[in-house]
Length: 326
Image (cartoon, helix red, strand yellow):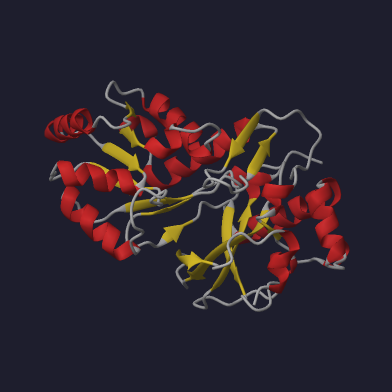
């Protein structure tokens, strides 16, 4: 297969052309995806638009090795998972693609990483192995090349001191944190930040009661003294991320696309402004699977943004059972 360059995509036509090329490659070389397509009785040759591409249920990353190449595995990313649940496994054969994806995406949405001091408050991720988020943030911290950039586990006093010092100097700062830790921080310290982006990665990880997004963001806005809370949307099974600069409305980089499916008929694609299951096309996933049916519910808006509304209740269903959701 010729070298695909997903990060050079500029137009809708280029995206669709590249997506179809990757689909045909993965439908032939990814044994799990190939078998899935065969079970659906879909002819690869009959697929001529991205709306006709079948999406692999995300649960297969828990039960199978989803790869489209025989190259050696360079990095294994694992989902967090709760005690007793099976972790998703993303076998990455070319980690440089992941690095290009998150570096390009950050620059696309926020500009040069060297302009920021990056502070990371990600205790639940730091406390386990195989986190793709930690891999990304660690690299961004190093790329920022700022003396105050770094990870903070439970040292809230030091983090608070550094945030206030950076604010006083007028330095652009990014604080990226898991929701429960950001709440812990603002319960113990108050801020009035004008030069800092607060970015939550979602999830209470069993440490706190789950809050609806509006309530969480309002508490964080009040605690940090900011107008908006940014968000990062990523998954273990993906090599790309979407970002929100407020109100829970996410945007994808040019090589990533969200499509919603009918919850009663997973092979039916919905129009904009209709709530449904979130399907993701991630062209950076060329060596695993670029077409994933997630267990999230969402809605795509006419301006190209999307929001995540929740999850399917039966979130532990496996494999092809997603095709018979009731």
